[in-house]
Image 1 (tube, helix red, strand yellow):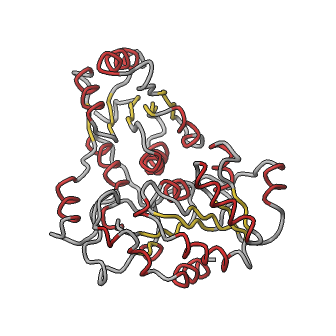
Image 2: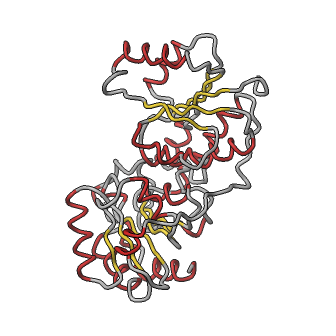
Length: 339
């Protein structure tokens, strides 16, 4: 089946981190199967993520407008069928994609196994070991379609020469560029901001610090750091996604929470240090191709219920700042050892 398949529809609808995690998998597939076209069904916002992958076309899944509801999904399926698609790789596996599956009767349609049972066992304390990574789960979908996909020898895009105005804004010097993304969807996935400020203060003395985030409250906090510490630049809200990717491609290392920024940096081949509060790398959401010791976790001796949930949205009240068990010096030393 796979050898004859020349056009695959890949479904990865939303969530920035999840879309970013699919990029190394699609890049590997494009390299190993250059004769196969990939049409990725996702939000138009994510189009820049796919800019360096040959044979990939992005189809805008306007699920809140043109293709809203069940009738909209039926219209979407009719439009997609005109693309002469051979098989479907569903990397999302939610209700919407299950409905889409019904409209593609007769087409091979494989969906990602999210490993819900073992993830539930992990958060319930019934096991504590490394689960299959999300990247491998995505690759398994293509393997189920007959493609022997190998993720062990990844390739990444080259550093992008950033625009002159951006270079002038950041400043020209010989300092290492450290990206820091201190925010996450839930506060329970964040390193306490007072401790993060200590990290920024120390690292900014010899390095260029580029701060990433979004939303007015976050931007205000990052602006404060920019004004307080030398060599510290707030990138948030100043550039579009394409430009941010260009900047990230020039980083020497990214420091991030368990969040989308970690996966974006990793998909570009950057070194990524992650901080984990009530979540844990064992759930399979570590950024791609990073050494295990780049993930810095809160103490399970003091907080034995970690991971309290897969996404960080559920936790006991006294676990919210479990990451205080990670000292700023631990983070600083890890980044300096990488540089």
